[in-house]
Structure formats: C-alpha cells, structure tokens
Length: 66
Image 1 (cartoon, one colour):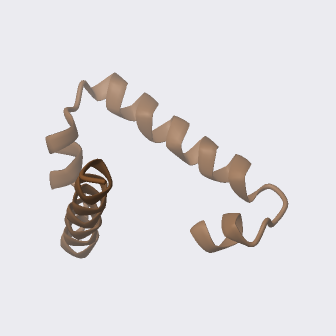
Image 2 (image 1 turned 60 degrees about the vertical axis):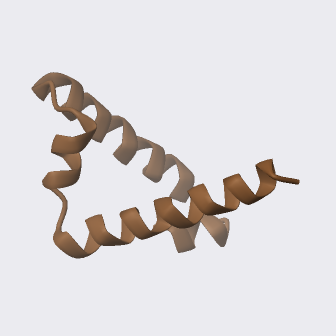
C-alpha cells in the first residue's frame, strides 16, 4: 500500500485513509488502548514498528541537538 501511495497511484491514498478510518473506528468501538492494538499485531509487524519508532526517535533527538 505504501508503495502505491509513493508511486502516486490513483485512489491509493484514499484507500489507505479508509483503512485507517475503519481501524480507528474499531479501536474506538472496542475501547482498545494503543498497547492492546500492538499486542494484536503479528509479531513481525510489531517488531518492525518498534524498530521504526526507535529510529524515528533517534533522528528527532539528533535534529533537536542541532
């Protein structure tokens, strides 16, 4: 999906926003916390998100030090 958005495919961004909207509505309906949502992810996806988050945090802290 991300590749389709980056390539500018028609409707890709709309589809991604719709998926996000549906996920957030489901979260709201079930009253889930962010931690509960992470636990429900497949292990590989959750690990990837943790790695991406740590990289993002490191980059932000480097930028803040400039």
